[in-house]
Length: 247
Image (cartoon, rainbow, N blue to C red; front, side, top):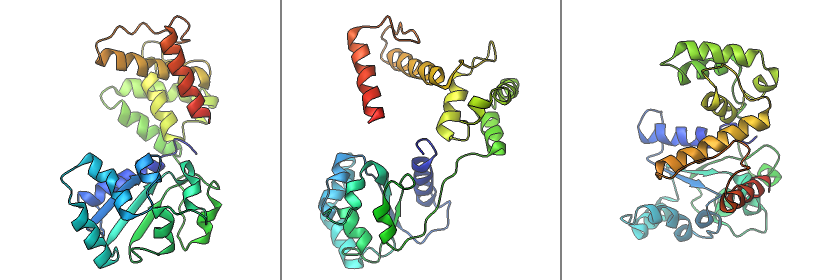
């Protein structure tokens, strides 16, 4: 599910390997978000690696590609995030670099980690793979996360846990890491209450994000939680974001 922690888990693995804090046989780890147009449209190594060159022009792409081909990708880990957001890339008719890697047509000795929501990309079942499911937080992990989030204010952590336990509707959603982060972010420490529904929780968090962005840009926020008194420009932006999320 969305917010379960797939992207966070992959980035955590990459960071641990890069910092030599995790046992690994991979001197090179390359992370690619499939939602990025540069990655999704790539049909060869040059196109794929443009994602990194765009962020760091100092990369010698020709030398890197030559090395990858000479070694056939041995000791290289490709990490692709979000196959469910680009499911056409793994279909048999696709010319994507991702499918070429999965089939072993190029860099046959490389290793691949690929994330996807369950059941969204049935074509992945055709490839030899080990499947892991990220299940989110259990009850102990929820309590641990809240205590860590409010580590400087244990009384607030205790109050939030107590409030969550009194709200089964929210507790059921707290196993999703993203939901729990939102709950911690919007928890009203003065009243120890949450908004009355999940929808209102998301509404309050969205408002907080807008206010925070405006404050960073030294603009007057002036947002109300229902977004009823906003400019047409803001309403149009929120509407567009909602449509994008829904689709």
